[in-house]
Image 1: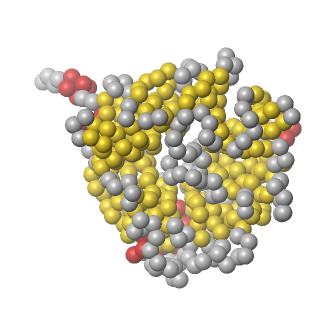
Image 2: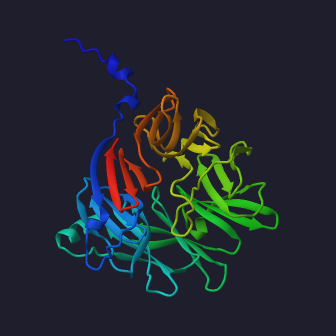
Image 3: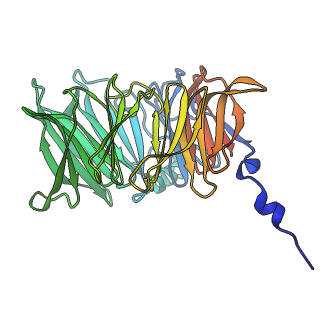
Length: 401
């Protein structure tokens, strides 16, 4: 018997991408205790290993299985309004950043809830037990931010009545919070978590510089180095360290790339959108720049062009440029080598198409996967080939890609 496989190997990965509807879920049909029934849009969709938590704009956290089976509300009542959530893959748990509407001065609190506990509490018809993480008293303008790739939690706690305070870096293990590092906020303009690094934008008499802190995060063993940049002190839009390339952008300024190897500086241009999402700082729903977990590629939107770059060799090499685009990169499928982006792409035969697109840099192919009304869309998440769309009525639609 002879079997010819050439047609299988020649087949483009894009041809196998066909969205299929999986389920619809109304978050406000899942009732629990004193949860208000006032409808609001889906603010965020956070995907775990076996379940998903949806956060509404009214501060309700709703859990359901990735198969679409509804579970229950994770929190209830005005005493615990969820502002933001993250998933900790090592702990198989969700982190919930909450405030209370009953407090005159809203204090940020972070809780941990395990997926197994949500499942158990659902069968026992009770609310899940939340583990309170002792992050200290965090009032406005304090914030919390989580780096899922390393499991580090960054918390800024301002000093009462002052613009100073402390930044703390925590790790989480078996539900216990460990403080790894504490930094005074005196000369700190901004701070970010970037994989295993802590990036600190500092202000000094000689100008702005970036302090890069590498593990282990122990005061006696701290490894740091500094990057000097020809920029004025000001709010930071994004900072990221990918291999030997440092990316930096201030609000309203072009994105610049600094090579640690050649010590050369390259102005990339003016991307659109925002990068940071935390409990306090979020001026947009999606990041304008997406970096792969491996740190070998990045994609970003700039002046109507979506660019995909290879940075694996410590330099910028363009893999693909898509013109007439108003779309943001949202996921990279390393197995297929396919990038997914969300927004508007101009297609010659169809005109401006708003929805989810896929592109294959190796062949320069692009495919429109599905169209939807972006104005009605309030939350978007694409994880493990499943697209979750949350709308203004509190309904989630899931599609397999």
